[in-house]
Length: 320
Length: 319
Image 1 (cartoon, rainbow over the protein chains, first blue to last red):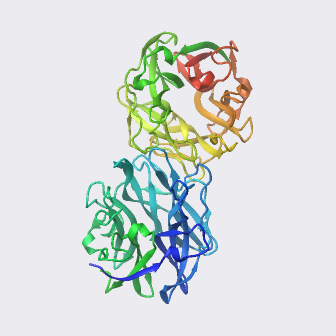
Image 2 (image 1 turned 30 degrees about the horizontal axis):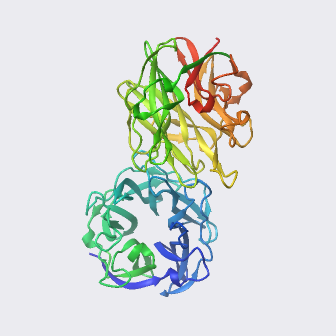
Image 3 (image 1 turned 120 degrees about the vertical axis):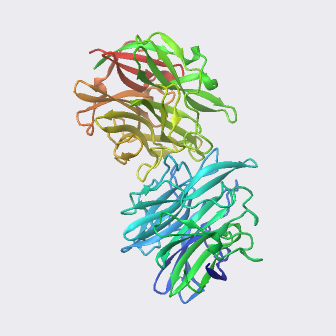
């Protein structure tokens, strides 16, 4: 079992001033380590429009490498523009996952559109940065990973990794829209694709992680890293109904693999739970593990899926 | 290339159709049997929840004289997609192609959006009962939006040549709001993809294979390809992207192109002459062509005024 010691919340979007597009939410943290700071990408929202609907942007905050509680700066503008009329990312770019590729930084992100019978649909886009991850240009105005026969909708939550010169994309794909109290709620499962170049992707077309709490369990944020001769995945999961509160809300799960394809789920090893009180007492979600100066950290979201920011935990002892 | 018009051959309002469909018989597509021709088309029901249309697939079986009707399908040929799926709000059109013992149906599925009226993608459903009913291979599409084809993938037409499946289809190149108080209008062009199995496709990715005649805002739709005399001929329809519904001079016309290598197409709409009357059911609009061969004859099915609200007609090639 992992033993995480919580360090508390490190970033609160409501404390940022002068950015109309960043009023609340700091979702799906993803890190890029620099010499003296850690850039944490996240997704945020301006205030809701007159119909109560949100758009979503992605941005970053630079934390001091020597003191992760210290915010050095916050992005002056979103790293990506919203898509044009009718495009897959017209209403949101959330979440984002970044990776270095030579002098470039590449970002994979969920692009959101709005639908009539269900609230939204999502497909995965790609963009590159030539300025160290400050701004990104989209590779095209369509998605790089889109719908296919057994992934009919809601392709989201990309996590980009490279192992042994192969590009891996973990993501989620919608399985069904479940109508709960008159509202269509998405059920999604963790999936994977591989690529020689990060552009042309081959889906493996199956669920990686067995469902545990119910058949319609929704799984998200498949965050993979390698340590001690095997691969580890932290992810989050929730019930399909009434998941906006403590009882059925997001928790963090864990699985391991020796070949990146066959995964053994064992949530009892995850080593992090909701708190008794405070910012993460109802739910914990969107885990992201990163190493920094011989220490291992877990960034994650608390209540209301990161409406009030993200926090950190640090690994006590060793990865097994 | 001279065609003799045979007039309108099917009017949906003369028949009782499944799914409470009353009007429209759009995009006719033929499947030839030993002693009859089955013609699939898209017809429409009203969605009671909001007054919008839902497109359903139906068919009519005709004698090989293409004049006498044997029967009209009275059951659902393929149900619409489930909640949130790409084909939830309509299938229009469906292209049918025989493959081994089955009939492959390539559907253009419609789903409604908020900022624009609709998006589309291409699905595959297979029939093992000679085309009476079709079952999807799965809930999602086989051809969908991609990096340089951002939306509106549709109108797939498939032909198996040698051991390769070829698909001609359309992809969107722009949504544009021409005035503040009207819905946005779309522009689309004809593209090409290939496959070894009819399921996994490789697109040419945003290569427009048919040149524009009306300029950048020409919308091209419904490609249909047939081999005639050593060339492959493509029939399609084209229109202006705005003010095309009621303005006869900007509405759909049928275009034509040909190739001898399945890659470089030469457009020559002028070579296509539909001889016959210039009044009546197809006087204002001609669209959704489908060329097919039957017992040594080459026919063109197509829709007339109002996008086929009152049926489709036929022309025969003078060989």
